[in-house]
Each structure stands twice: as C-alpha cells, then as structure tokens.
Amino acid sequence: MRVLITGASGFIGRHLIDILDQDNHEIHAIYNLNKPSTDLKKVNWHQLNLFQDEQVKKFMANIKPTHVIHLAWYTEHGKFWNSEKNKDWVNATIKLFKEFKKLNGIKFISSGTKAEYFDGEFSQEHLNSSFECKEEMLASPDTIYGQSKNLLHETLQELDKENKCLVWARIFDTYGPYENNKKFCSYVIKNIKKNEDIICNNPNIAMDFLHVHDIAMALSFILHSDFLGTINISSGKSVTLKYISEYIVGKLGKEYLLKLNQDSKDRRRILGNNTLLKNIGWVPSYEIESGLNDLIKFYDNNL
Image (cartoon, rainbow, N blue to C red; front, side, top):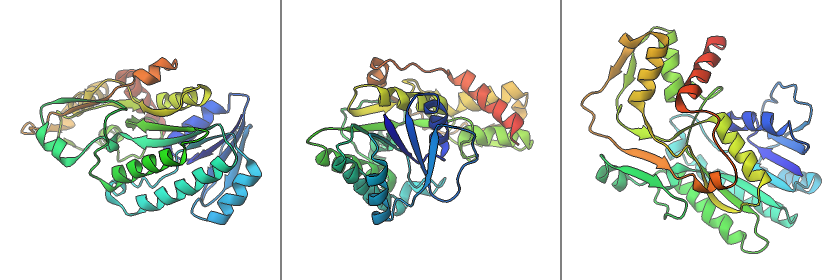
C-alpha cells in the first residue's frame, strides 16, 4: 500500500501520520510551507502546492499512490465558514482526484463535514430538538464551507461511476492536542490558565465531539477496510457546551470563572449516526471526560 496524505501537517493529519507510521506501508505526506519537525522514519515528506496543476500532475505520476487520504483545506478559525477560498479547494481537489483516477488507484478518502447536513431554516425551527445525521440524508448546507464540500462530494461521485474508489468521510466536531487554541475546549482551558472569565453564550447546544485520535483511527480503519461510499466519523453522542465547560472548570477548580448565558433558548442537540463506522470495527478510545483530561494534560505541558 502506497498512501498519500494531504494536509499531513495539520490538526488531524499529524495524528494520522503517527498512527500510519506504525504500519508497514509506504507513506507520502504533503506539506505546503513548513516541513514538520518529526522523527517518524517511515514517512516521506514532500513540499507541494496543490493549486499548481502541472506540479500535481508530475508528482502523482511519479509517486503513483494506491491510496489517498485528502485532508488539506482552508481552515482559518472563524473565517473558513463563508470564505471564497473554499471554492478554490473544490477545484484543486477535483484535479487531484482526476489524476488519481488515471492511475487506477484503489481508494481515495476525502474529508467531508457535518456542515453539509444543515441549513439556517433547520436552525430556527429546531431550537429544542435532537437531530441525528445519517449518511443517506439529503445535504442542506447554508455556509460556503458546507456548500463547497457538498458540491465537491457530488462532483467526485459523478467522476467515480466506473472503477469506484471514493470514500466521503463526514467529520463531526473535533477536539484534542494541537487543535486551534480558539476552539471551544481549548478556549476554556486557556482562559482558566490565564485566570480569565469563560463566556459561554449558548450553553445548552449539544454537539457531537470526537477526540482527534479517534478520528485518525477511524480514517485508518476506513483505509484498511473494503468500505466505499459516504460515512460519518462521529461519536454518536451529543454533549452540551455547558457540560464541557463545567467539567473543565470543575477539574481545575476554577468554577468561579465560568459565565453561562442562562437566557439562551437554543437547545439543539446534533449528533452523527456512526453505525457504518462501527460496522467496520472502529470503536472510540476516548469518552468525552477522558478526552478532555487528555487535552488538559496537553496544555499543562504546552502553555
């Protein structure tokens, strides 16, 4: 197995690399600007701009990957949701996929998102409802990010009608070591470390959080399975922001810093059905509490 990973130096990618480095595969990892400092011995690192079509063609023809895990995307915190840069990544991914198809590759895993499932109308009509996302549901995104991922999914499916190789992995809410420190779990921990107030405006929203190690393991299971098609990578459970923030402040003895908006009427509970993922043998290593403990420990050594 000759595996190519894009976005290998990113949040999920760096955890996936650690896992695949333990397997007996030929691993090729793409980075754009800065090569990660790592002692992984089985990983071949390549600097490549995925927007440079000719470079991509030459690279793919030279490496000839049998499997691709495509994680690269525009993910600047707070900006990616409605950025036009999402559309650039749609085009770049289509071209990468076409080059892979020319090689008669075995499996191309592309990262989707839970944002494909939602629209603004849903958000307003279901403020007190629980919503389980299943792979067969029609996508209804209302952000440029979700719309771009959905468009890409539909386009790749059209290109994959013969000699099928596509897996579309819809990833839900990630957290864990090396995440952007503005994400909710890290925001809570960092503010505690700085002895600053923690503002939680929508404490009753419940989301499907999954530790990044479990996401990376899910991608590894998919890679080594016979599965093709659309699949959720999720915990199958929802947990409120109130619970997460109260757990962390309680663990660190800083309850007085937490400021919950008690007037919030938004009580949506969103989770991803993960039956297909469990059917290929995956089980999570972390419950939300042990995962948060792991993130707290990470910040004990990295702040």
